[in-house]
Length: 216
Image 1 (cartoon, rainbow, N blue to C red):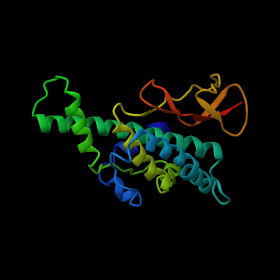
Image 2 (image 1 turned 90 degrees about the vertical axis):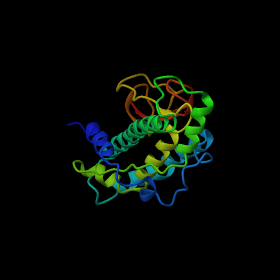
Image 3 (image 1 turned 180 degrees about the vertical axis):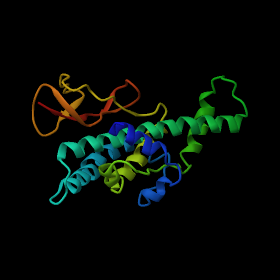
């Protein structure tokens, strides 16, 4: 089983601990906190602060984790958080449609109805958490503030209309695109691995925040 599969499974398995149990210091999810500009700000700060702190903690003296290994795991965590939050969001919206409108029978809801459901869901606490059993480094990451804020931020992203999204991972060896990414610690023309995914306005949409890659 690959580490990506482990991360996805471990997040998907957990629906018993609420987001606010993990990140009680954060404000409740609301219209104000989930506006695109707020999410852009939170996304940038997540990398600057909690991501950097997690990297420092897990690679400091006395820890056995190599920097590139930790970076790749942190990347997998935010991608897995987004994937499962998106899945939960889609299921929750359909459940609410079924409850409020009894049976939608496949018809497209008016935009006013969709907005009403979205506004309601922004006030709902999401039952999401992580329960790691197989990967020791992942387990340590999930005990950091980085993880809790990942879940919170990814959930806010899914509540936008259309949902904000993380761009797909670039293939190793692909050409470095300065319009999409920033360099991590060194310059080069080819991507070695992705450090931080770009934030997009929507799937295949415009770039809101550049990603970061290690190049060679």
